[in-house]
Length: 233
Length: 357
Image (cartoon, rainbow over all chains, first blue to last red; front, side):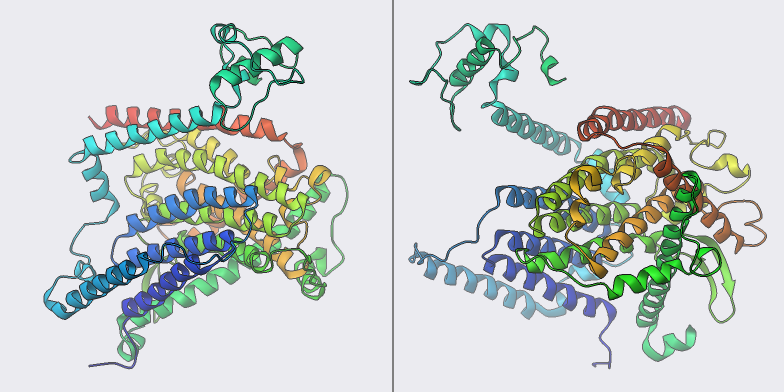
């Protein structure tokens, strides 16, 4: 039954499966957050290779472009800029969760064993070979713009909402850009003893407006104009 | 080939052939890259009214090998406060991500060789070649970003952050400028895209100005946006802010020396070569040219000629243009290049819709 050489898909599966597992373990076990992030990139790349062996090239490419190329770059950026320290090992809290974890792991292993015991009678993804067009770029595109058009559009609106929300949250502390004429004359300034406006992370828009007014009064910021976005130049 | 298949099975024979092909491809590309460096120094010398390196061998022909020897024998310096593992990993990522895309570019039509039979002149031919290229390119950002961070030097960090943000920003317009061609071709397979640019009409069938063939729309806007974002993507003049020597010493590779610096250096030139190949393949008809039907091997010559044109353009720009300021660079990328690329996509889709119906 066994030849001298394993088949090429078998070898690739073992290679990238081991790589994915190793990187996943490293990601959890590392104490340096940057090493964890790099390990996660390794997981994504080896998962993409596994998708390739399962005849799903489009998913593989998207996995690399979106997860490894875009999302993880942002994560790495944040880790770099915040200069996150190595984690210190702490005594384990939540010890009562250990038996739950063991139980869940046992269920997972049992499930895998059950699937394996079904043997070759159960269809495995690897058997969907060149005959099927599942996972090809054309079939995914057709499905996305015909059958699943509504979910696709709703998802894009959801992402747009997240974008707008992120911008709103990020802009709250920096009110001078918001200092439209209507805003400036509303609430009284919150002044510290020294006469400066106290502004800290987590302050509300009201303090921001007060800060803006103070800046405009002292000449540090330009007076608000009617057209928004003009001060960017 | 048949004999090998009988010995170890068809799968393994193909894998072995691909392995050999990939390695030959890497060696050839690295040789071309070495001579691109020499050409750059000589052409820059010509532009600036001096000679350039011409002492080693006839006309400086052996200069790349002298440079390589020097790189190998230089002292390897590791900054004492660097993050050791990442510091060694970064150049490896950079050169790997630079070399991986070269396997998908078709450099000639189907040819015939004794013992091997008929085969197309491309190392790997698969459905998602274009997405593969974009994916590997996006992973290349880690090389520069991690290099800048792990060196533990302010110049390196600033250079790495600049390079990474620049590459992420221009990746968008780079990808969008290719969408027009993909809409026209209806495939992501680079070999098929080149085949579609052939046939009667010759040069007029190239995607950049193809209008006379059915179902096409000239991609001049796409070509120009691609060219600009490709130059920015490879961090070359006039977009070489990441290594602006007047402010950042040498940017993300300030702390790198000897062979590790050589890897970054090679990665930059390999990247130049691959984006030139992509421009040739998608917009200028790849290996298409006169006499390809009669004598297929001449496709390689046409392909290399077009690629060399782009490499020369790179060098020419470097000898001519001054450097951007960083805010200008970002404004240009996000507020001009990206909208223009999107307009090109909409325009192409509209034209194709009316030409098809």
